[in-house]
Length: 317
Image 1: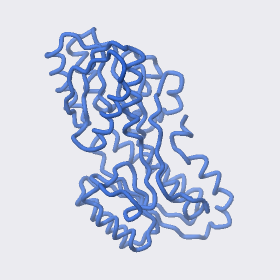
Image 2: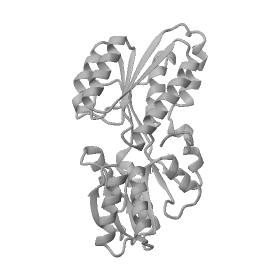
Image 3: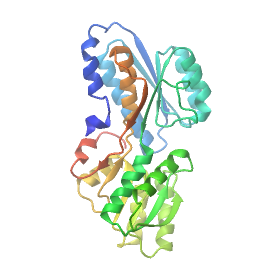
Image 4: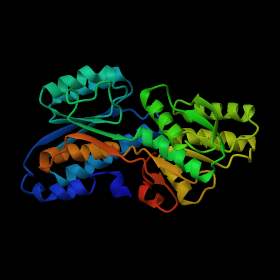
């Protein structure tokens, strides 16, 4: 459900709404530092950051949320320093690449600023770097996909399109392998598609040339699924039964809603998690509720029955 997806989206607002009037003169500035829209998922991050920022500022007249986007770690480090110079009480940051940004984040936290880290964790992800960590469950994203394939087509021959050679991709692969354990599912190949639709298109073309029979494609990312579907359509292949991707893009959710045979399900890894982190950061100041620690969002299996709860038609992703 959408309420569950956003974690404290409704619950936190309800918890501290009663304090809003009494504390409306309390001035709080939250800086949000996120990647530029290099692909669909990060475009969704920007959409949800701005959407939730607007909602929170309407609810809390004393709150100011400043959203900055950056294309690379160096630019993001500069953006974080700029936010610090402006004066912020909290930083919500989804790093382009976490380790190169650790020093900039630690400097902010060392000044007494509340830090909420989103999605991408540095090598050392503890209280020295952040107060709050909000992320999707990468292992579960792979495991849920694997379990669906295991239950739906237990003897399937599957090709896998990975993301990038970084830890969260390996977590997803480990989860997928766990999900298909005990079945007759056979993985024919695994190649990197870099979470990019064009790269995934090329990888899928290669698979279609190499393998005369493919039952299922797992590509772990909705952007890549677009390229996969294009390659299958262009090749005129009818042996492929379905594609399982993930993230929760509006286009893939709509396909699930409409009963598209090629996209029967999707696995949630929502860009809206940045909104969850932002709401929890606001709750730290206005809600008088504990928000420190780790908050993990479930990798929900999106089906035709529940897809409407995850559909954001105005989102760019």
